[in-house]
Image (cartoon, rainbow, N blue to C red; front, top):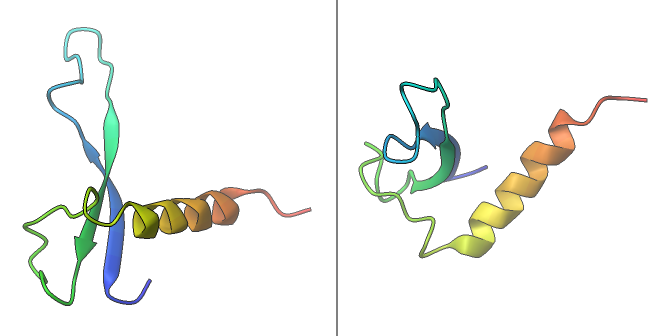
Length: 64
């Protein structure tokens, strides 16, 4: 979506290797200012993340 990228990263602290349970968390990157995706800015731009998550959910809905 333009200069932004929303991904779901593995949360290694919350995931449980023994139970084989993986927990993913959203991460938001500003590609214009951080093309190497070093700084997750989801806490600074929650509205952008929310909009992008809604678009992803809409795209995942089955077609009639």
